[in-house]
Image 1 (tube, rainbow, N blue to C red):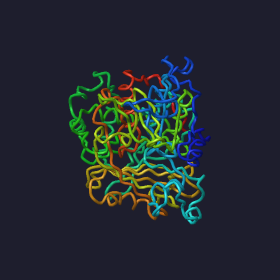
Image 2 (cartoon, rainbow, N blue to C red):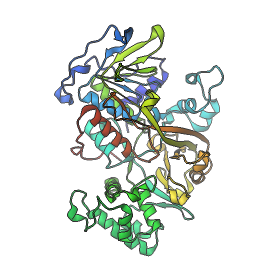
Image 3 (cartoon, one colour):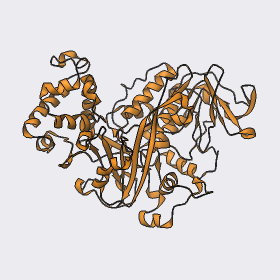
Image 4 (cartoon, rainbow, N blue to C red):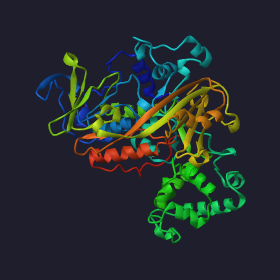
Length: 521
């Protein structure tokens, strides 16, 4: 396994002072576009400005002062976008208020994990906080940890893998398979999601007669081609609902629950009233991802998912992009018509401005009027020193707690990893539990996950509001990503990226040419 070049940048960023340019600066190629060998298009070269005039005021230039696009935040969505736009030949400026890559998709060492979650003392700045020595005595050293903030794995045949291959970012990272996928059943403990026909016959998730009906359902799914109606056995997948398809095969409520949440991985039961095609495609994705490497449909980047935004930031830098971490963004600047024209960092005489006709970023960088709250998620990062007893000798896994099994409206997700994926010290484990908040006691909603894990050494809890843009950005040129949802994979993130890319460029990314795997082991 090798660590991507981004790991060095992340360490450098964490150690650097405010407003230091800690990443590759692409030598001013910028808007001139990449050559054909790098896949770039020709854009009008943009000059380096000595000053920036906006709204009748004159400012110092932020970096070169003028860009084809400015990207705010180094979350995965934003880093994929900056990589794609710079690959296209655009001159890109990428800023983040944090001193590390990834935002909520970062992977942090123990010190940065402590700084993120613990409350500073009066008069103390978060960046100056130091964990107590006993933390390292109990858990190991900073270099041993790359702790994710969100519990997401990569579907081995999903859209994110295709984006990785399309951009070549898969060459910057190494991946390992996640050992197993499990589902929790009320009163019945934890069961492995069947990966073979033998496992399907022996699973305790359903009764004898349901197993036969479920096998017939899976055979239908395998044969049905979404683009060939003659393979649908007379059932209109586009017009009829998933509930009707379940009825066609006689699947009971328990089997439906398992299929919709463990296979199709929907977070709630709203899919039942939607056209069956959506679920058919989701189950097919699970199956084709499972076929890649067996035992589970998931792969995971060594050193944590923070390697993903770092990999795409490297792509952007190779194509001339400029990254500045530890850089505050006071405002997105709009013209009199309400169209974004740039960003400002700093106040008064220290204010710097960069202008661009496109501003992409996560919701936290934009005015409240441009985003709406969609709910809340709770995530708990757990560190412990023993294998999970009910998973036997499995050291990496996803566990889904279906909503009906818990008597609630949304699933609970649990990801478990350890030293094999280079995210923790030897004999230490990391688990992240997550769900959509439904009550005023969100920690209680994760209680089944905590009970499964057993005794914990350390736990960090975080309740976050989730947002989405109120418009598509075509009018105001603010292209805002959606907050990470509670799902256990990156398919919704990839869909958001592809949608934003189309809105920004007017083009559709053709990922069908992206074939092969992402190097899982």
